[in-house]
Image (cartoon, rainbow over all chains, first blue to last red; front, side, top):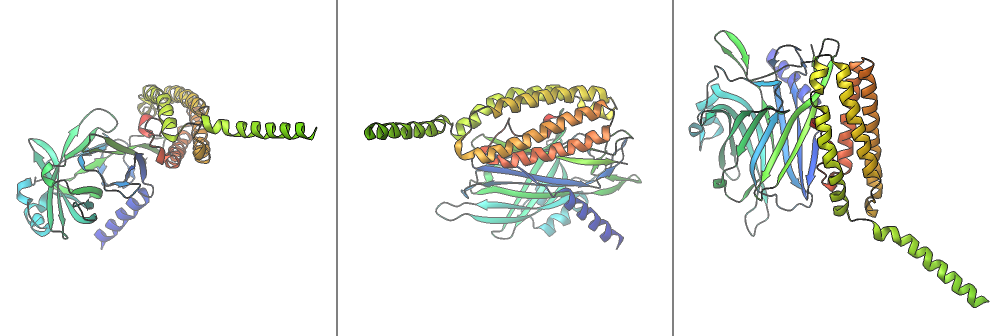
Length: 254
Length: 161
């Protein structure tokens, strides 16, 4: 019961935090980005566990077919800390061509989040149709780098995609960057439309309670809150164009 | 006599039609307008980024005077930018939408002035509340001209420290 209440509280605060998605347009293409984190009241001087929700999407203004996306980059600020110390990893090959249940069976200890995705499939001489996929996110490593391994499964048509987002740290406002290259072997037909991901994982390691994502709200004692650049999504299209959008949110110091 | 009046009237009508259509003929297309404004906004957006560098750190470290100086510089850049772009000829069909956009930009400029003043007076909480309003007005401004596809002329909070 207590867990349910906590989950409801987290969901309610995420909903409150995501009431205003933002958009940018290039040509006939609109990118949207929305998201939030919970709890919004965070310690001023040390990181505390948080849940993060990100929703991003692409659409065209004239309902024409979406362009093919070759790269997705999600940036979050350096005050958000990704810690995978002591968390098991999920090798991508272990969940390739598996159902959600099998993927969970193989990698549940590495589970760090879940979500949904919609893609548009455009087969020549046929009207485009949407494909809805359920997403699971696992902690992983790819070529020695920390990564988020996203497992997506659609029922109609039956499709499984395993997409690694590599985690990089770099200077600047969005110090933690997750990057995924959409492989050409996905084919020319599926066009990314939108996704929603929720990251939340608490776990125990050497007797300590840890969180996959933690954040602080580094504001002085006499200041109750501060707005900050929360996230930025950048999509690279097959023709080389880029479209991006950043959003700001506020945290409260406690 | 009546012939002279008729000719005079015809000339007057022709002149008034010419006067009415002249601005429309000079008005740019939306694409031309966007391209023109982006060349004005780009250096200002980059200058804002430079001027605001470290402002967040200043607020975090309670150096409100230093933050106020950065906001004052950003306010001057923003104000100059709005003044310059508002003087550019506008596409006729977008007149109403653009005047709404400029209303939001003026509101943002007013917020920047107030943020600077509050930081100078050592009222950081009021300043941060105004920053939230500044961001909100920026989002509204972006939504009004979404179809224009601005990059440098659109509001991005990440340029502000």
